[in-house]
Image (cartoon, rainbow, N blue to C red; front, top):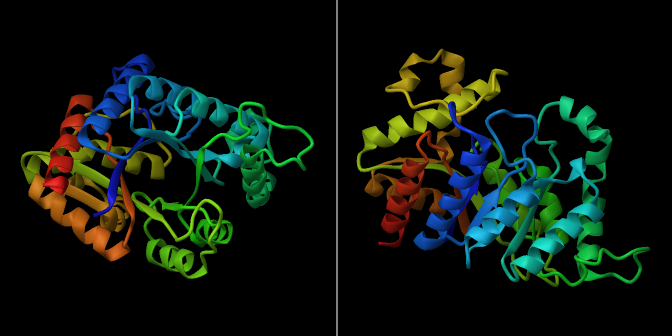
Length: 327
């Protein structure tokens, strides 16, 4: 049986506030811990009105203090937006605050459109070319490599678990070459899932931290007492996906009955393409869908995404699903 975890964007709903979103994420993390989840990850996104997780390491400090045992981490930090030294200091600090609980998932996408490059004063296209070297440098900073010209005091010797994230073959190849665990963003970009996992496993080179390939795959998940209610709750995230793909992102919207029936063909096709990594329905239905996905991918871990307009219903969704999966 794979381990189960939660991916959160710290979503901000229409009519809500960022403070409420932060409080909701902390409550969700406590729920995930109580339900037996292994990790609670927050993703870095910038300049998006409906996502409040941009200052990821700060949010993780909030989540860490709200919990006691669940692993907390970035899913992920978009490394081209930063320099390795600062990220090493931030996550070394988190590890000092929450020993043995900190993960650092690394991606090479900017986490927003081209305007973020100007805001960050970065040439992100060029920075992304140095992603492999930056990952190696970050690892060296945590190891306290004496060859480095300067040590990151809070990072040296920190037991931070590093991951490579991806939605293409590039991340799979890099994770395999470095002997790091690999997480695939199949919840929104499933096209290369099978190929990426195959490549990662075939090319994996054991490292000091990982002897065998270790895969996490992401799923969209909504669980409710009935299939109909779960589909209704899922329409909030579906509206968000459609708005993002068509250049109109915003805050979380209330759910809509029979939302997919109202969509034009292009939008419907986009959502249906992502259904290969989706579990929506009653506890029994979700258990069957998650089990089938786990068997197909051979994933060691599955991480669930699935924001609801009513945060209490997301917690209920997670509790129902975890009870069914562990039953």
